[in-house]
Image 1 (cartoon, rainbow, N blue to C red):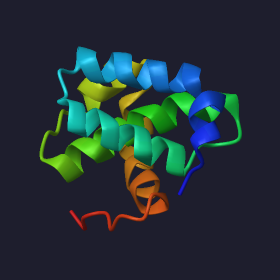
Image 2 (image 1 turned 180 degrees about the vertical axis):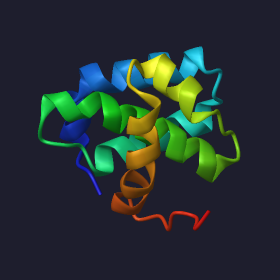
Image 3 (image 1 turned 135 degrees about the vertical axis):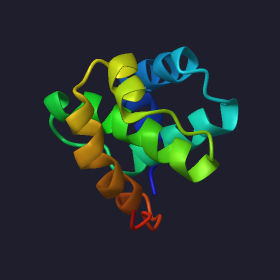
Length: 102
């Protein structure tokens, strides 16, 4: 779980997450869940945060049934598709969800 001040501390990354979610035409609930997932497991390294944003968006889409392709999510955030592929399950698990087995 995250604290309210985490939203302020990571405001820049949440804005990027929201912008990518809008670009992907994800619904409001899916974007809100992506924010929660991101804030539940924000990486220490600034370099890792774009991947965490992309993984959070993809994981939220899977959970909400509002899924976009890994490539589309990666393009919207500006990371490699393999980054999404490698990180979304761990990001989902870190937020307290059980990732699917497929």
